[in-house]
Length: 180
Image (cartoon, rainbow, N blue to C red):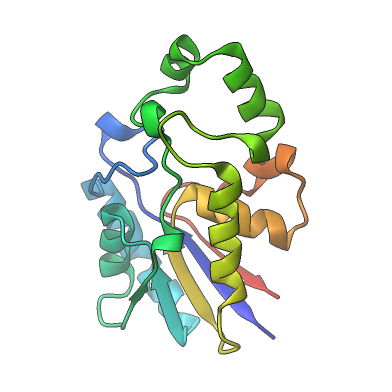
């Protein structure tokens, strides 16, 4: 049995909440750090043989709180998507600067979305898929990463179509274990 431990980084300071902060690199809030520390005992009980983490600060700080004594590998493919010109904007602010075509593509045809000045969703998904395909057959494995990465992984595990991807979005500071 292959056990996959998935953790979304902890909460960020209020200034970044309810904003699209893909490649932006805010730290965890004190609440976020405390929440991650609460995961420590449950996480360690799974005894992961390998822990992978996004190199972005909020994920790194989450790992420091959850598993401070463990060796951690970092991989750029676990970074959040780059929202480009929409970084640090709320959904309402994005709607004010985006074209109707961009909003329509984002909502209805996500795989074709390229964020203005940012990442292609297709390329982002391919990078996440490539990372998952390269995992060795040693389990349990833990990933400490971001909402977009986890939506991709969980959507594939559950065979969710793209339009249902938000069903796979974990709240910040939450751990979910899958047996594959």
